[in-house]
Length: 101
Image (cartoon, rainbow, N blue to C red):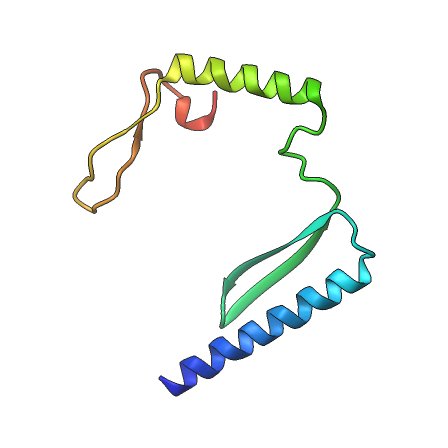
């Protein structure tokens, strides 16, 4: 138990150090730190620039909203009852909706 706690605290200290250094050296550029893994195997990367998935101007937001509303109207997503594994899953009225089509 003590070894696990030491690993967790070391991971937290390392992550804090990395974030502070990246924040200080990027001149507060628009970006984000992406980390995956666990305390034994951590991979981090700094992404600069705006998030491409988020519409940046009013026209793009309007197009994205219309696309989402059309998808919801066609697919009619609903959340089902928990299965054997206890997970609740989405169900769709049309085919290929789980892929955003």
